[in-house]
Image 1 (spheres, rainbow, N blue to C red):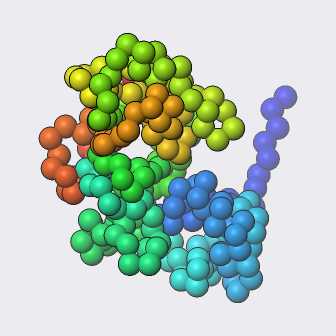
Image 2: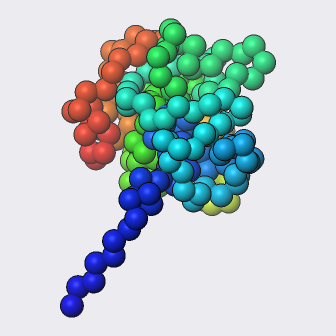
Length: 245
Protein backbone atom coordinates (compact mmCIF):
# COMPACT_ATOMS: atom_id res chain seq x y z
CA UNK A 1 0.00 0.00 0.00
CA UNK A 2 1.45 3.36 -1.03
CA UNK A 3 1.76 6.13 1.52
CA UNK A 4 1.66 9.78 0.59
CA UNK A 5 3.28 12.45 2.70
CA UNK A 6 1.77 15.91 2.35
CA UNK A 7 4.18 18.70 3.18
CA UNK A 8 2.91 22.07 4.40
CA UNK A 9 3.00 24.72 1.65
CA UNK A 10 5.51 26.77 3.64
CA UNK A 11 8.03 23.90 3.60
CA UNK A 12 7.55 23.30 -0.11
CA UNK A 13 8.44 26.93 -0.83
CA UNK A 14 11.66 26.85 1.15
CA UNK A 15 15.09 25.85 -0.18
CA UNK A 16 18.34 24.90 1.45
CA UNK A 17 20.45 28.01 1.96
CA UNK A 18 23.38 26.73 -0.12
CA UNK A 19 21.07 25.79 -3.00
CA UNK A 20 19.23 29.12 -2.81
CA UNK A 21 22.50 31.08 -2.97
CA UNK A 22 23.72 29.01 -5.92
CA UNK A 23 20.41 29.58 -7.74
CA UNK A 24 20.80 33.32 -7.09
CA UNK A 25 24.16 33.25 -8.88
CA UNK A 26 26.34 33.86 -5.84
CA UNK A 27 28.70 30.98 -6.68
CA UNK A 28 28.69 27.24 -7.30
CA UNK A 29 26.92 25.08 -4.71
CA UNK A 30 30.23 23.97 -3.24
CA UNK A 31 31.57 27.52 -3.05
CA UNK A 32 28.32 28.69 -1.42
CA UNK A 33 28.74 26.04 1.25
CA UNK A 34 32.23 27.39 1.95
CA UNK A 35 30.84 30.92 2.27
CA UNK A 36 28.34 29.64 4.82
CA UNK A 37 30.95 27.66 6.78
CA UNK A 38 33.15 30.78 6.91
CA UNK A 39 30.35 32.78 8.56
CA UNK A 40 29.93 35.18 5.64
CA UNK A 41 26.17 34.61 5.24
CA UNK A 42 23.41 36.13 7.36
CA UNK A 43 19.71 35.26 7.38
CA UNK A 44 17.42 37.82 9.01
CA UNK A 45 20.33 39.40 10.84
CA UNK A 46 21.79 36.15 12.19
CA UNK A 47 24.98 34.52 10.94
CA UNK A 48 24.16 31.01 9.69
CA UNK A 49 26.80 28.32 9.31
CA UNK A 50 24.58 25.39 8.29
CA UNK A 51 24.12 25.03 4.49
CA UNK A 52 20.95 22.94 5.00
CA UNK A 53 19.12 25.83 6.70
CA UNK A 54 15.76 26.33 4.95
CA UNK A 55 15.05 29.80 3.57
CA UNK A 56 12.35 31.52 1.57
CA UNK A 57 13.11 34.48 -0.72
CA UNK A 58 9.67 35.94 0.01
CA UNK A 59 10.08 36.15 3.79
CA UNK A 60 13.81 35.93 4.59
CA UNK A 61 16.46 38.61 4.17
CA UNK A 62 19.75 37.04 3.07
CA UNK A 63 23.11 38.83 3.03
CA UNK A 64 26.51 37.66 1.79
CA UNK A 65 29.47 39.70 2.99
CA UNK A 66 27.01 42.42 3.99
CA UNK A 67 25.37 42.66 0.56
CA UNK A 68 21.70 41.79 0.14
CA UNK A 69 20.93 38.90 -2.22
CA UNK A 70 17.63 39.67 -3.95
CA UNK A 71 16.71 36.23 -5.24
CA UNK A 72 17.14 34.05 -8.27
CA UNK A 73 18.30 35.62 -11.52
CA UNK A 74 17.72 34.70 -15.13
CA UNK A 75 20.48 32.20 -15.90
CA UNK A 76 23.25 33.09 -18.35
CA UNK A 77 26.09 30.94 -19.73
CA UNK A 78 29.29 32.06 -21.46
CA UNK A 79 32.47 30.56 -22.84
CA UNK A 80 35.52 32.80 -22.56
CA UNK A 81 39.00 32.64 -24.06
CA UNK A 82 40.89 33.65 -20.93
CA UNK A 83 44.19 35.51 -21.46
CA UNK A 84 47.21 35.14 -19.19
CA UNK A 85 47.39 37.44 -16.19
CA UNK A 86 43.73 37.25 -15.12
CA UNK A 87 42.65 35.64 -11.85
CA UNK A 88 39.59 33.40 -11.60
CA UNK A 89 37.95 35.04 -8.61
CA UNK A 90 34.83 37.06 -7.87
CA UNK A 91 36.77 39.01 -5.23
CA UNK A 92 39.61 41.25 -6.41
CA UNK A 93 42.92 40.65 -4.60
CA UNK A 94 44.34 44.17 -4.33
CA UNK A 95 44.36 45.83 -7.75
CA UNK A 96 45.02 42.68 -9.79
CA UNK A 97 42.86 41.99 -12.86
CA UNK A 98 40.16 39.33 -12.53
CA UNK A 99 38.34 37.40 -15.25
CA UNK A 100 35.10 39.31 -14.64
CA UNK A 101 36.84 42.50 -15.80
CA UNK A 102 36.49 41.05 -19.31
CA UNK A 103 32.69 41.32 -18.99
CA UNK A 104 31.88 45.05 -19.27
CA UNK A 105 29.20 46.14 -16.79
CA UNK A 106 27.70 42.66 -16.32
CA UNK A 107 23.98 42.76 -15.47
CA UNK A 108 24.20 39.48 -13.54
CA UNK A 109 26.35 38.26 -10.65
CA UNK A 110 28.82 36.07 -12.55
CA UNK A 111 31.44 33.54 -11.47
CA UNK A 112 33.75 31.08 -13.19
CA UNK A 113 33.03 27.36 -13.47
CA UNK A 114 36.20 25.94 -11.97
CA UNK A 115 39.43 27.82 -12.52
CA UNK A 116 42.46 28.37 -14.70
CA UNK A 117 45.48 29.69 -12.82
CA UNK A 118 46.74 33.20 -13.47
CA UNK A 119 49.42 32.15 -15.97
CA UNK A 120 47.17 29.73 -17.89
CA UNK A 121 44.84 30.64 -20.72
CA UNK A 122 42.09 29.28 -22.91
CA UNK A 123 38.59 27.90 -22.51
CA UNK A 124 36.77 28.99 -19.35
CA UNK A 125 33.06 28.86 -18.55
CA UNK A 126 31.36 31.77 -16.78
CA UNK A 127 27.79 31.73 -15.46
CA UNK A 128 25.44 32.73 -12.66
CA UNK A 129 23.95 29.22 -12.42
CA UNK A 130 25.35 27.37 -9.42
CA UNK A 131 23.55 24.13 -10.29
CA UNK A 132 25.04 24.12 -13.80
CA UNK A 133 28.50 24.86 -12.37
CA UNK A 134 28.20 21.98 -9.91
CA UNK A 135 27.22 19.60 -12.73
CA UNK A 136 30.28 20.53 -14.77
CA UNK A 137 32.87 20.34 -12.00
CA UNK A 138 31.49 17.42 -9.98
CA UNK A 139 33.86 14.41 -10.21
CA UNK A 140 31.03 11.96 -10.91
CA UNK A 141 30.58 13.39 -14.41
CA UNK A 142 34.21 12.62 -15.34
CA UNK A 143 34.33 15.45 -17.91
CA UNK A 144 37.61 15.41 -19.84
CA UNK A 145 39.58 18.64 -20.21
CA UNK A 146 42.21 18.99 -22.93
CA UNK A 147 45.28 21.22 -22.66
CA UNK A 148 48.12 22.27 -24.95
CA UNK A 149 51.43 22.49 -23.08
CA UNK A 150 54.38 24.28 -24.71
CA UNK A 151 57.83 23.73 -23.23
CA UNK A 152 61.43 24.75 -23.87
CA UNK A 153 62.42 21.07 -23.84
CA UNK A 154 61.85 18.59 -26.64
CA UNK A 155 59.10 16.06 -25.99
CA UNK A 156 60.89 12.70 -26.15
CA UNK A 157 59.66 9.14 -25.72
CA UNK A 158 60.86 9.21 -22.11
CA UNK A 159 58.98 12.47 -21.55
CA UNK A 160 55.75 10.93 -22.85
CA UNK A 161 56.23 7.88 -20.62
CA UNK A 162 56.72 9.98 -17.49
CA UNK A 163 53.78 12.25 -18.37
CA UNK A 164 51.55 9.19 -18.84
CA UNK A 165 52.48 7.98 -15.34
CA UNK A 166 50.92 11.10 -13.85
CA UNK A 167 51.88 12.69 -10.54
CA UNK A 168 50.80 13.10 -6.93
CA UNK A 169 48.42 16.05 -6.62
CA UNK A 170 47.34 16.93 -3.09
CA UNK A 171 46.62 13.59 -1.42
CA UNK A 172 46.29 11.27 -4.41
CA UNK A 173 48.05 10.08 -7.54
CA UNK A 174 46.41 11.26 -10.76
CA UNK A 175 47.04 10.04 -14.30
CA UNK A 176 46.14 11.75 -17.58
CA UNK A 177 43.48 10.24 -19.81
CA UNK A 178 45.81 10.61 -22.79
CA UNK A 179 49.12 12.17 -23.87
CA UNK A 180 49.85 13.18 -27.48
CA UNK A 181 52.99 14.80 -28.88
CA UNK A 182 52.11 17.66 -31.22
CA UNK A 183 55.55 18.90 -32.23
CA UNK A 184 59.07 19.22 -30.83
CA UNK A 185 58.22 21.10 -27.63
CA UNK A 186 54.43 20.80 -27.58
CA UNK A 187 52.20 18.12 -26.09
CA UNK A 188 48.45 17.63 -25.55
CA UNK A 189 47.40 16.44 -22.10
CA UNK A 190 43.84 15.29 -21.35
CA UNK A 191 42.72 14.98 -17.71
CA UNK A 192 39.44 14.46 -15.89
CA UNK A 193 40.33 14.72 -12.19
CA UNK A 194 39.83 18.48 -11.87
CA UNK A 195 42.62 18.87 -9.30
CA UNK A 196 44.20 22.29 -8.80
CA UNK A 197 47.34 22.79 -10.95
CA UNK A 198 47.28 19.11 -11.93
CA UNK A 199 48.53 19.66 -15.50
CA UNK A 200 51.42 21.85 -14.35
CA UNK A 201 52.35 19.34 -11.64
CA UNK A 202 52.29 16.46 -14.13
CA UNK A 203 54.48 18.48 -16.52
CA UNK A 204 56.91 19.44 -13.75
CA UNK A 205 57.38 15.79 -12.76
CA UNK A 206 58.54 15.18 -16.35
CA UNK A 207 61.04 18.09 -15.93
CA UNK A 208 59.24 20.26 -18.45
CA UNK A 209 59.62 24.01 -18.08
CA UNK A 210 56.15 25.19 -19.13
CA UNK A 211 56.15 28.23 -21.39
CA UNK A 212 52.45 28.21 -22.16
CA UNK A 213 49.44 26.22 -20.92
CA UNK A 214 46.17 26.52 -22.83
CA UNK A 215 42.88 24.70 -22.24
CA UNK A 216 41.27 23.99 -25.60
CA UNK A 217 38.39 21.63 -24.74
CA UNK A 218 35.93 20.76 -21.97
CA UNK A 219 33.99 17.59 -22.72
CA UNK A 220 32.93 17.97 -26.34
CA UNK A 221 33.01 21.79 -26.23
CA UNK A 222 36.01 23.16 -28.14
CA UNK A 223 37.53 26.64 -27.81
CA UNK A 224 37.94 26.95 -31.57
CA UNK A 225 38.66 30.37 -33.06
CA UNK A 226 37.20 32.51 -30.26
CA UNK A 227 39.62 35.48 -29.99
CA UNK A 228 41.63 35.84 -26.78
CA UNK A 229 39.93 38.01 -24.18
CA UNK A 230 36.48 37.67 -25.75
CA UNK A 231 33.43 35.61 -24.86
CA UNK A 232 30.18 34.37 -26.37
CA UNK A 233 26.97 32.88 -25.04
CA UNK A 234 26.62 29.12 -24.90
CA UNK A 235 23.92 27.67 -27.11
CA UNK A 236 21.79 24.72 -25.96
CA UNK A 237 23.94 22.55 -28.26
CA UNK A 238 27.12 23.86 -26.57
CA UNK A 239 25.77 22.82 -23.16
CA UNK A 240 25.00 19.35 -24.50
CA UNK A 241 28.56 19.09 -25.87
CA UNK A 242 30.00 19.76 -22.41
CA UNK A 243 28.69 16.41 -21.20
CA UNK A 244 29.57 14.43 -24.32
CA UNK A 245 32.70 12.29 -24.51
